[in-house]
Amino acid sequence: MAILPLSSEKLHWIAMTQLRIRSSYIPGYRSLTRFAFKSAELPTTNFGINFENPVGLAAGMDKKGENIPNWENLGFGWIEIGGITLHGQGGNPKPRMFRSTKHRALINRMGFNNPGSEAMLERLSKQKKKKWATIPVGINLGKSKITPNEKAEEDYAGTMELLWGFADLFVVNVSSPNTPNLRELQAGSELDRILVACNKVNKKCAAASNSECKPILVKIAPDLTNEQVIAIADTAIEQGCSGIVATNTTTSRPEKGGVMEQSGGLSGAPLRGRSTEVIHLLYSHTLGKLPIVGVGGVSDSESAWEKIAAGASLLQLYSSLVFEGPAVTKTINKGLKKKLKEHGYESISEAVGHAHRS
Ligand SMILES: Cc1cc2nc3c(=O)[nH]c(=O)nc-3n(C[C@H](O)[C@H](O)[C@H](O)COP(=O)(O)O)c2cc1C
Image 1 (cartoon, rainbow, N blue to C red):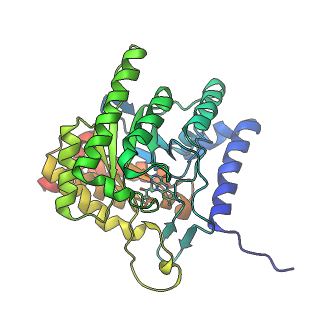
Image 2 (image 1 turned 180 degrees about the vertical axis):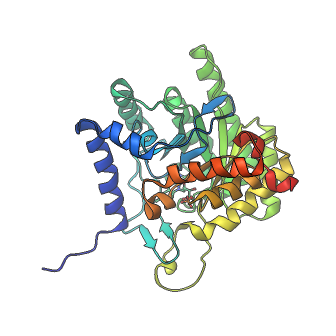
Image 3 (image 1 turned 90 degrees about the horizontal axis):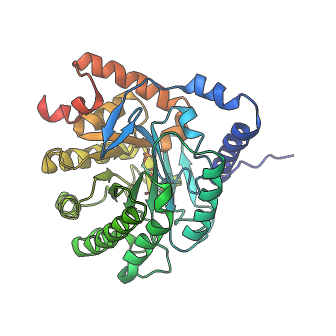
């Protein structure tokens, strides 16, 4: 009997389900994974939040927040769940996730498949009653396909309002290549409108719960010109954003043929260089005033250090978890600790922007 190869999306589903079920039902599984994958302590504080280590899980891996309490057992210092849109949607037709082992890259055109913010409110409420993360949890905000760009702010701010109580920080994602015209929302006035609406909701929710506003970050694409990157940074600063996440997936390809012909966003090793370039540019322009989350091809301590040296205060990864396996975060943090020592830094925050000084 021929065995059909499982699609990348099926493999992802199996891994997520196994992590959830084993962590919930096998006695000792949580402690065992925590022991096996525990990261070196590399405490760092950004936008008023303490992180045990800088390495976070990038958006898109845990779209529905199924494994919120479990990622810290794999050594992550923080996580970002989602993207979540105001209206539930199935995303693009399958297949929509592809692997290139040769390039250590993924191509996806998922299209924000998610249950929508109302259903997520229910899911997260149930999860919070059972068990929650002890590490910071970010929520990635996307825009529903049915919402026109002219009303995008209602979509982003609507999700934020419903899920405000569950996030330590929010990421406004205007950079996914898989929702038609979404990337146009990165332009000055469009982004401005979205951030004004999110700031309003943030203030309203903070006042209602007698607490502080939550950090709002903007996630940008790597396929922008340098002038566009700078314009977005200026808008983010004007609107009082807490940081920039650089970058989302790219529409460019390292070569032609095979899987590379698939449409969608490419992540992993081939994205590393451009993502670091964007971080470098942002840091030079903002002079460290706007914390940067470095994401794109982080897979070992070299690529992680490169991002911190370019100006990233925090990191995220997705593809390397697929290609390197669950020990990747532990390995990165161990290597980063060594790098700090080699360069005579006491902490990650001291090392941020190292390349600009040496
Ligand atoms: C299958 C898949 C789904 C993704 N979904 C989202 C998403 O919903 N929102 C978002 O901001 N980024 C999303 N991303 C982008 C990642 O968060 C990250 O920016 C990108 O993969 C680059 O990091 P990496 O090279 O470590 O994978 C997704 C990536 C992949 C591979």
